[in-house]
Image 1 (cartoon, rainbow, N blue to C red):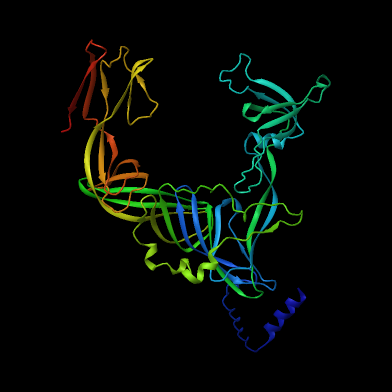
Image 2 (tube, rainbow, N blue to C red; image 1 turned 90 degrees about the vertical axis):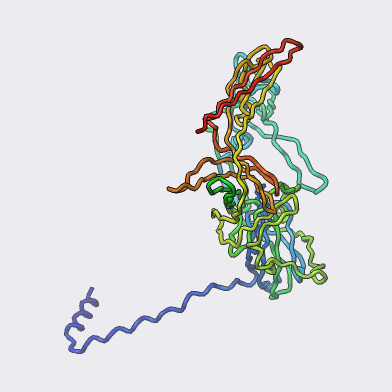
Length: 497
C-alpha cells in the first residue's frame, strides 16, 4: 500500500509529461511442435466401410527412430481391430513389436455370469428351472441358497490358429449356506442357462476388469533414421447406411438421390478418401483379433511381445509401391464400381473426428416411374382353424382365421398403390429407407417412407405408397362339392374419380 501511494504522489507532483508506454512485443505465432524422435505420426489416407460394420483403414505412418532404433505409433482401441494387420513400404523394418498399456477399470456388470462373478464369496438365492422345462411347476422355479465359490466352464482351443483357450463360463458352484442346518451338505452346481433370478443382501453390481488403455506398434529400424510405411488393418467402429429419396411429379421420370449416413467411433479422419461398400462382405475371420492386439501376460511389470508381420516389402521393388496417396484424383468422386457382388460407392474426401456423425448426398439419377395397384393375399388351408388368411404386406405372423369347412365364404381385401422403379444405372441400388416426395405447386408433399430393396442394374422394384382406399375388393369362395374343390371369385370396384 505504501509503495503504491508514494508512486502515485510522485506522478502527481511531477511537471514532466507522462511518457507513453511502449507497446508490448507481439509474440511469434504458435507453431505445431514437431514429432519427437521415436514418435510416429499417422495420416488416414483411405477408408473402405462395409455394411457389416468392418472397415479397411489405410494409414501412412512416418517418423524418425530414436537412439535405440525404435519408432512408436499409437493405434485405435485394441478391441476394435478385427482380423488382419499388414504393412507396405519401400524398406522393411527389422521387427515389429506390439506394446500395450493396461489398467483396472470398475464398470457395471453385463449379464448373469458377471453378476455372479462379482459376488463370489457372498450368499445368494438362485431361482432356476431344469433344462427343457417349458411349463412352470405349480410352485414356480426351484430356489437354491448357497455361497458362490466359483464359475466354471469347458475350455476350447482352435488348433488351426493357435488361439488361446476360450473358457465360456457355463456353470456356477454354490457352497452350503453359512448356518448350522447346512453342515455336511455338499456343493451344488447349476447351469447358468437354467437360472432365472438371483437375490441376496448387498449384491455387488460392479466388477473390476483389466482393459487395454492404449496399444501401439513399435517399429525396429536403424537409430535416428527416418522411416515410412503404409499400415492397413480391418477394424470396427465406422457404421453407415444408405438413405434414398425420390423427388418429382411421380410421372414418367423422377430424381432418385442417394445419401450416406456415416458414424465414426474408430479413428480421426483428416482429408481421407472414403468409400462405402454395399453388398454382403465375406470376412471369415473378422472375430479373430490380430496377434498384435491380443493381450499376452509376460511378467507382472511388462506386457510387450514381438510379432513379425507378414508383409509385401520384399516384392515392393518388382511391383512398385502401392501407396494410397498415389490414387487418381478422381477416385473420391468417381462413379461407383462393382465386381458383381460388392458395390463401391465413393463418398468423397472427409474430415470427421472420432464420435462424429455426418450425412452426405453422393449420387442423383433419373429413374423411370410407373404406378401399379397390387392385391396380395396369402391363404393357408388345412390348419386347425380350417382356412387362414393374412395381408401379404402385413406382419408375417398375423394369420386370421377365416371359416371352417375348407373355403372362404366372404372376405374384404386390401389393395396397395405402389410405384414401380426401374434401375437404369450401371450399378445396383443398395437396401435402405426411401422417402417419396411429390413436388406440388405449394411445396414438397411427402407421401410415404418405405424400404428400397436391393435392385440390380436393369431390374424393376415395387415400392408401396399407400392403401388404395377408393379401390374395393371382395373375395369369396364356394365349395363345388366334389373332392373338396372350391371356386373363388374376386370382385374389384374402382371408385377413383
